[in-house]
Length: 360
Image 1 (cartoon, rainbow, N blue to C red):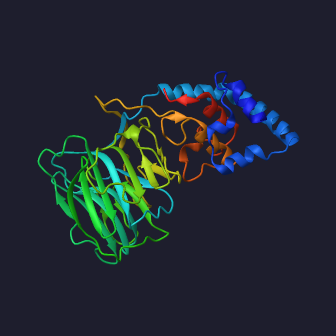
Image 2 (cartoon, rainbow, N blue to C red):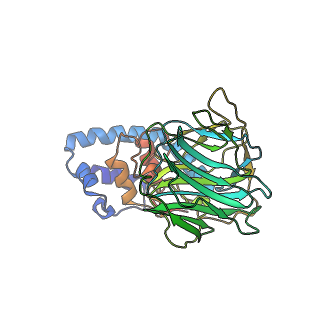
């Protein structure tokens, strides 16, 4: 009841009882079974914390609502351009989706878009040129009966949505949401090693292989997922429609300004992504950031308070905050840490309460 009063005070127009907010059972238990004296003490602490952060949280909310999204991209203009994904990525081999919005430079040779490998035993590579596009899956030996698909004339020089999907023993290539090619893949490609590593662009294997060149062109965003997100034709999403969920392994949107050296990965893992970094003693160069896409179609801007991404800030979002109070953002709800400070606390609660209702 005390918590319901706090909600009413901060939202003058919100008079519905807390029971109508329909949080999960675990969250309701936290509200109903707190002793009265303890609830009074905790509510006072919560008031003090949220009052201290109210102004900052409101500023964050207003800035996020007004900020233009989906405008930046990374330009890979040299075959030595690279971005290293730090840590053991362990991206999936079975039932996975590698999708991106890409603009391939006309006349460009074959180069790496992504490469994830563990020496020569395992390798997952997306490659493109001005005439071909391919996905290599290797686990001791080649896993697929075919790896390259020819690109239709006019594919390069313009933005395309490309998705590589593995579903069971079938690999599918979608371009602009249409199934372009599919082929069988052997069941033995069923795992990944804990010391795998990944780069976007130029890549150097751990063993005595040459430095593999980067593709030439532009990346608007790239999304790596566990599971087959697409199995039939679909309408390609734009960047602002792509959000991290429990299946997201890596999500980069390249909206950082020019000169940025570390990119923000929006997946629950928050991998550190180093621009221009290659494994010593080899050196790479940095793709160009801070570019703007002209004429990008308008998208609905997600508000920070909408944790589950359904377009509304409501009792479900509130319940997620309460259920995971004091912890880091759970894997299933990477947007729960609304201010990205690494903890679910009063600052996140303030943003949720002040964003109550439909996202603007």
